[in-house]
Amino acid sequence: MFAGTRRDKTIRNVLISARVWWFHYVMGEGSADLSPMVEWDGDGLAHTAAELVNSLEITWHMIQSTLASWTPADLGQTFPRRDTSVSHQWIIWHVIEHDLHHGGELSFALGMHGPGLLQEWEHQAPRQGILSGGQVTKGQPPLDGA
Image 1 (cartoon, helix red, strand yellow):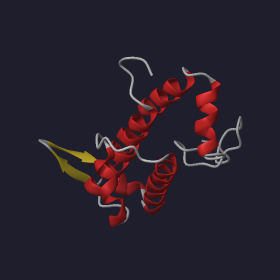
Image 2 (tube, one colour):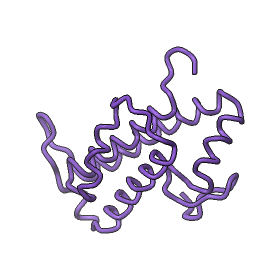
Image 3 (cartoon, one colour):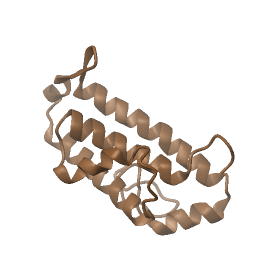
């Protein structure tokens, strides 16, 4: 990478950590097994590609299961946050925009190194729509239409 960019594993750590922070720590969703992942943002550890892919899948499953269990009325439930409160709806949007920002950063970082690095990363997680949580075939959109 060139100066000023993050390593792709660091970006993936940030994605995982934020998902766990908001859904598990703030809203109490998901299992206690997710707790260590909140420390991945800035932990400096070189997690393996398999750990990263698995963690992205686990955290997406947590989000998907949580959303499937809520009713529209649940979106208004609030949680204290610093000097204000935030709703389920705000947290969902915040996590989405965070995934979009850092997912784009990851895509850019991998793409600027040419197809070799991107193909290597895709090989580590074949057929997985990592950021969308959907199954994909290379070059095809996720099956769920996302």
